[in-house]
Amino acid sequence: GENVEQHPSTLSVQEGDSAVIKCTYSDSASNYFPWYKQELGKRPQLIIDIRSNVGEKKDQRIAVTLNKTAKHFSLHITETQPEDSAVYFCAARRRSNTGNQFYFGTGTSLTVIP
Amino acid sequence: DSGVTQTPKHLITATGQRVTLRCSPRSGDLSVYWYQQSLDQGLQFLIQYYNGEERAKGNILERFSAQQFPDLHSELNLSSLELGDSALYFCASSGVGTRGYTFGSGTRLTVV
Image (cartoon, rainbow over all chains, first blue to last red; front, side):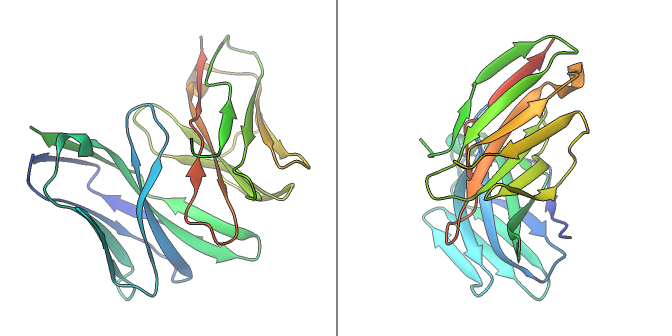
């Protein structure tokens, strides 16, 4: 099966600085990589995603990059704000004949210090 | 509202008891997934159903079971509850052509 590793587990940045979270995956059959943001006590919410045929995708202050050869993908948040503080999960989707199967990283707790 | 409905939102019960958590997937989604999230922990995959059939199992205890009904809603049954079962239980759904999972708001289970 797939194995997704995520680093770092915790990250503190000053407001306005950038934050980078990195994930690696093991199964070359994985073809879709979403990122979720989870605020305390709330449900994970999809914030950005990237498909395996794309190397980079950007949405305002958030960007995701994918290196298929190295099997790693990263989340980049620029000009961080206190409301970016949350736990972020990466995931890899592997298609099979039984449907989609998502594998999650262990999460990164991001704290943006005002 | 994500379109995935979970009930109840909160549940407090005693050790040894049995509870049932319910999930209605987003309209049109055939796959339902259950996850357990303990305090400060990641998302632990429990089980997946696709159109009524079990498709994948994760770290689900034998005391736990689930099913998906013909109307596609799913129930997660937790029995012989222990203090360590206290957690947030999330249901998620996905469908053909949909992006990622859509998570429900979760059920917070507290075992006392």
